[in-house]
Image 1 (spheres, rainbow, N blue to C red):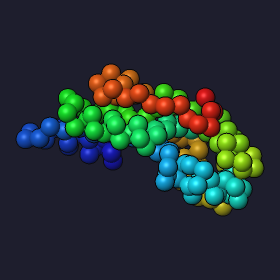
Image 2: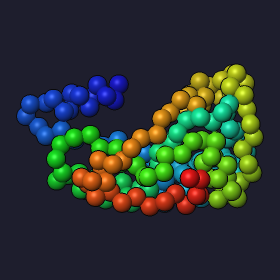
Image 3: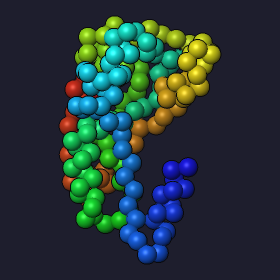
Length: 153
């Protein structure tokens, strides 16, 4: 779906098309922050590690994303992955995040049980995502992302 939209933007004859693909946002007033909703769920032991936790997440701090977005306004058209340098598998970052926010370690849940109790989307997000590369955004947009504060990588 998103790639189809990107193709439409890039092939529009009368506009300069640029698409920014952001990693998962973290930082003040986001889902992934000590006072964010995800942390609340972690502290209430509501987020298990599903199956192998093989998905690879790419994160980006909101301030780094904002700087890259401003830079994209005057950059050559294209598709840019705006994310940090640390794509990290769920099985590594989820326990590290829990330690960082003082939450209990996530319990293990097998895929069939997770699918039945949490839904297909939860299984997908923890086991089917690939990380991405930010080299183009670093080179063209001057992206200089900070390290994840939970230190999973």
